[in-house]
Amino acid sequence: MNKKMVSAIVVLLFIFGFVSFSFALQQSVIMDYQKKLKTLGYYTGEPHGKLDEATIEAIKACQKACGVAVTGKMDKGTCALIDKALKEKEQPMKEKKAE
Image 1 (tube, rainbow, N blue to C red):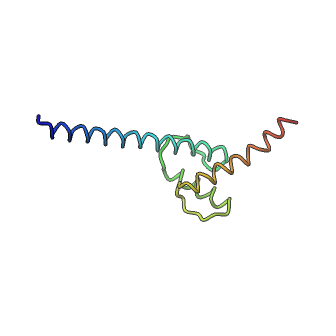
Image 2 (cartoon, rainbow, N blue to C red):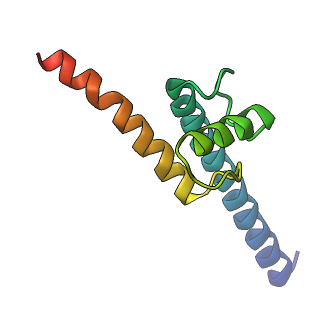
Image 3 (tube, rainbow, N blue to C red):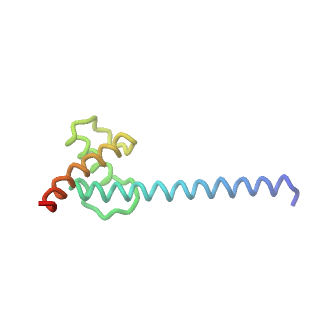
């Protein structure tokens, strides 16, 4: 093998590794938000890290309940919305424990 071919293989392996890492990270984030949506009562399945129809419907239900545009997309705004709703749900529970 010549140096150009070796360099090309190294670059491809790097790209493939990055894509694989990115995909695994994405699955981890989706699973995390499936767990949060389940805690909030919008998702009923078992968290698995795939953005399936049940997850999209749970996202839409959460968006509708929070009075924002219903897109079904898991973007930064939706993630922040879910985090805020979860924090608000957990706050009264923490206050009751303190009493």
